[in-house]
Amino acid sequence: MNTKRALLVGGALVLALPMAACSSSKPEAAGGGSGSASSAAGPAPIASATTVTAPEKAKKNYNIQFLQGVAGDQFYITMQCGAQDEASTLGVTVKTQGAQKFDPTLQKPILDSIVAGKPDALLVAPTDVSAMQQPLQRAAAAGIKVVLVDTTVNDPSFAVSGIASDNEGGGKAAFDAIKKLNPGGGKVMIVGVDPGISTTDARAKGFEEAVKADSKFQYVGVQYSHNDPATASQLVGAQLQKDPDLVGIFAANLFAAEGSATGVKQAGKSGQVKIVGFDAGPNQIAALKEGTVQALVAQQPGQIGAYGVDQAVAALDGGQTTTKVQTGFTVITKDNLDGEGGQAAYKSSC
Ligand code: T6T
Image 1 (cartoon, rainbow, N blue to C red):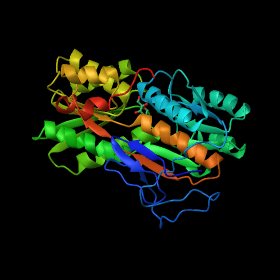
Image 2: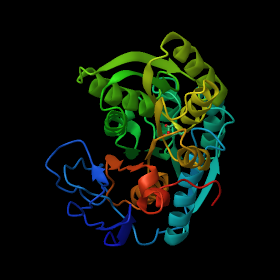
Image 3: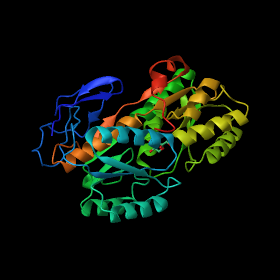
Image 4: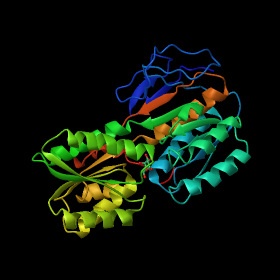
């Protein structure tokens, strides 16, 4: 396997050389350690340097399954597109499925049927850090190479790799954006999804810590929208009744942002209460253009999907894998929509 294939990462060219690659906008292999590469068939290295193995071609046409956090979410659709493109470059097959809701009770039966089909590898975004732990561990024990994409579980040690955004850093960046929009400070809230989702919990943590470190701001808490825009909208309406002087909302994912925008609009406070949302689907971009939302933290879902396939193929071919790969994000505002901001927007179809 040739690991010298050049990868395009967030617009920057990255040479995927073991221990030597670098990029202005990541990815980074996280986890500390000396960074020495393992033997070809050895365990995943934990490196402090930026390291992503990029196979040139797979040794055979592997059967790779991708289990999304939820179907129909533009974040996971864009991830699917990235995975499919990479799969066709490497000569492997990726099949994608996802439940109708972001819910472990719906995700688990799909996982069980995937495992019963004995694929070579599985790319999966677990919907809960605890509930998906055992089912995924069983998948790995059945000989399937498991790659965690986006979300993770409490103990991901069974996985060959985990690829995710810098979610905590993204939460902090969201606070920085709110602060820029409200230099005088004031009350801020988080519209989250559900406790137990690794990504949105990390974003909330990054945001909360940043708010609490700034005496001008007052954190009024997190409300969970259960990945439902209508619930997010109601929660925001209720919070605005309670705190009419609220100055900012951090909406921790696509559906939280969509609902927050509706809630603020219905309260007649568009532009007055600043919204910074995670993710950048077409509705979020429209809300940004309209002025209901002021900034978006866009992830690199296509890149996460492509790396997921790379890591799966590297594991199957006996090559080098990377335990933890961190991808970057772009803060989109009206000012950069015509350039890098617009380019970071998600797709609705491949
Ligand atoms: O924000 C993404 C993803 O990173 C998160 O884990 C769940 O929500 C999204 O899919 C957006 O809806």
